[in-house]
Length: 207
Image 1 (spheres, rainbow, N blue to C red):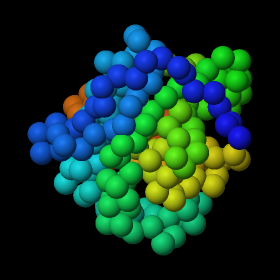
Image 2 (cartoon, one colour):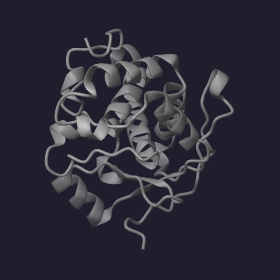
Image 3 (cartoon, rainbow, N blue to C red):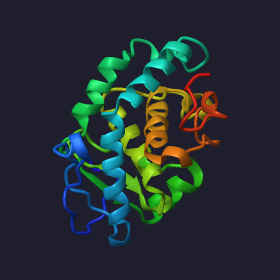
């Protein structure tokens, strides 16, 4: 059964990474016309970040310094950064994206803060139109978060303790992708794990 109804706008050209990642592409992205350029940029940013040495270093540092301690530790049990990055990379090619909205989108955004849903295993990642427009780095964050879910990573505290959930793997991965996508403009905020507070893109994660 389909949980959310996806948008039915015409699919844009499949967006790809840049430079050495130019052959790595998302699948079709169905979004409102006024969001297409932003989503295309976000897809490129997500691909480039996931394949970057800096992202790998940041994820490894977080896992080493923070994953074993605190209420979020259980979600990190058995999570290997190298294998996780390989799974994220494998989850990008052909990954389709669509949106959902209407009363359901408004309700889930208003009362549960929902911004996206990873959908069925074979279907598109679904972004909530009630949470748009957003910046490209923020959408890249969501892409990475939902791809992390499809790689088997979870945030078990999200229904009862969102502050803890934001330090669990999908949220941390999304934050790190947004950090690299935004560059010098990035600042951690209340939507990020508290362990990132005070850092900028040039800060060493975990200090």
